[in-house]
Image (tube, rainbow, N blue to C red; front, side, top):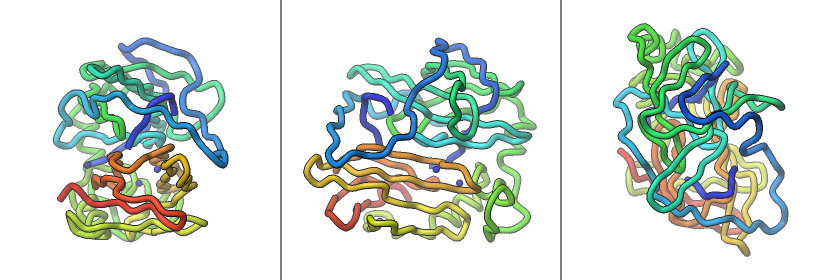
Length: 260
C-alpha cells in the first residue's frame, strides 16, 4: 500500500485516480512534483487546520504525496495542499503515479469527484491524507474485498494488499508497528522497513539544521506516500496507522504511534 508550499504529516487508507472529473476547480497540470532534497530546506509552516471534514468509516485514504490504484484500473494522487488557518483544500491528480501533463483538481470536503466513471465524494481533507467515499455500493465492496493471500509477492500482484479498505489487511499491517504510544525509528541512508503486507517505508533525507525530513512509502510499485519537509510534531499516516513525528537525528526519524 506510498508539495506544495505548505507542511504536512499522514487510518484506513487508499489512494488513486484515473481520468478525474471533479466539482472542485481544475488547475491543469502541476502540483507537488517529485524533487531531490537540497542540503538545507526552507519548509513553509502549515497554517492549519490539520483536518477539515469527517472521515468515512471505510473510506479510501489517499496519502500526501502518494497515489492509490482504484478497482478496475487508474488511480488518484494527493498532489498538493493549501491551508489558511480556517480552511483547507487538496489538489488531486489523475493517475496512481506521477506523469507529466496530468490533469489535477482542487477539492474540499463535500466535493464530488468522478474517477474514470466511478463517483466518489471527498469526505475529509487533512495535511497528511484525503479520504474519499465511493458512491456506488459495488465500488465500495470491491475496495473491501479480501485478498487471495495475506503475503506480499511484489509488484501489481499486491494490489489487493496495497490498495484496500479491507479491515483484516489493515489490521495485519497495524500489527507490524509498535503499540500505541511507542516509538518507531526509521533509519536514514537507505534503510528500509518492509511490512509483511507489502508497504516499504524509507527516509529520503534528514536535515537537522532545518529540522525537517522526508518520509516515503511504496507498495506494488506505486509511491503511496511522500511526506516532504516533516517536522517534529507533524502527523503522518503509514499503512492505515497514524504517527506523530517525535524526533529527528542525523541517523533516524522517530515516529510515535498515536492511533490504535
